[in-house]
Each structure stands twice: as C-alpha cells, then as structure tokens.
Image (tube, rainbow, N blue to C red; front, side, top):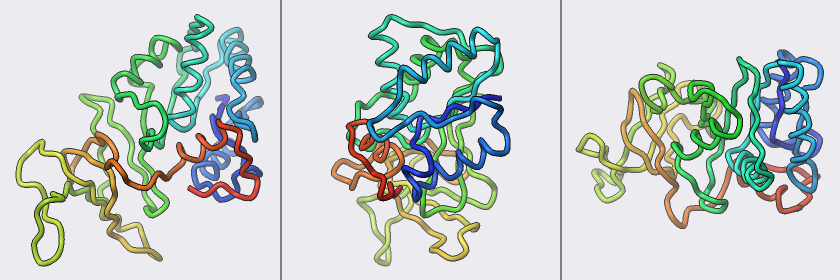
Length: 242
C-alpha cells in the first residue's frame, strides 16, 4: 500500500533509527506515492492532507507511520480546519515515541479516539510501537482484548520499584498493578548490554505491560523529540540522533 511517513527522510536524519526502518519498509512494500513528509521546517501538513485526499478519491488504502507528536500536529490542524476524512478500508496508523514530557501530552485512549474520529479508522488498525536505540527488539500494542504491550518471547519486561533496593539494585514491584520503572531484558542484544533500565513508568511486566508516562525530570530523548525539533524549524541536516 501507499506508505506516508510523518518523519524526515534519511538525508535529513541519517542517524535516526526509526527513519532507517521506515525507509526499508517503503522500499520493500510501498507502492508509488510513498514518501516522507517532514522537511527542515517541520511537518508538511498541506502536502500530507493532499496525499490523504488523493488516497480517499482512489479508494487506495494508506499506512500512516510516524512519531506520536507528529500525529498530534496533524490532528490539531485537521481540527482547526474542521476537516474529517474517511480513509479507505484497510488503512492503518502506527505511532511511536510518545511525548517525552515536552509536547502536548494526551492519553492513549484519547489518541485512539482522535484518530478514529478524524480519519475514520477502526481502533484495531491503530497501533503504538515501543522501540529504543538500546534494544534490538521492538514491542507493539496488542489490540485485543486490551492495549497492553506483549514482548516477543526472547524479551522480558520487569516493573521495578524505585523505592526498594536489595543488594544495591532495585527490586520488582510486589503488587499486581503497582506502578514502577520498566526494565527490559532483550536476548537479541548481542554487541550491547542485554538489560536496559528505562525512565518509563508502567504497570504489568514479563508477559505484558503498559507504559503510563515518563519520569518527571528525565532526559528528553527519542524519535518524538527529534520530530519536535523539526516541527519548530530546527534544521538537523547534520544528523538527528534518536
């Protein structure tokens, strides 16, 4: 299908891992018209809307991929224009990166309702991705029966209690549903540490988990942060690092 990426192209962001993956997907699976839609001055909203209208007129399914913050900008523009689209059957949306405590923060349920309302997408076609530069593996939403993320079988995600230590390390939370810091054990990591302690707050663990927010005061980082820099017109032609 046509793949539209709310992200800078590889020339603008040569070190951004999300862009590398999107470019690989476009080359393998994208039909004519697939493209990146973030330039040095931010998201090319008018061009993106024109592409979406073109897909609607041709009844051609489209895959929208990009940072969570990029979709917020798109949705806000559509609301300001009082614009609603009905994307063709089979269309889908995948966002990644969250909001990093810097952009407008909205809950996952709000994001899904927004996308359903403005793009006429069914909820099961809206998926969030957790990807980290430090991890070889990626973790996606389950859409049935809930929005928990289920790691592949070679990954274990633990919820660690930041207030309890044992032998100099954090301990796992001792109550189901209790919030803590997410720690990922990724056996696919070969030339890097296999255990990653994140600054993400979540619940669950091991078999499935949910990300709730980022620790307040944690260093902003990731693909949504890079998108935000583009959105505010900061030229990153020297390399946007995730």
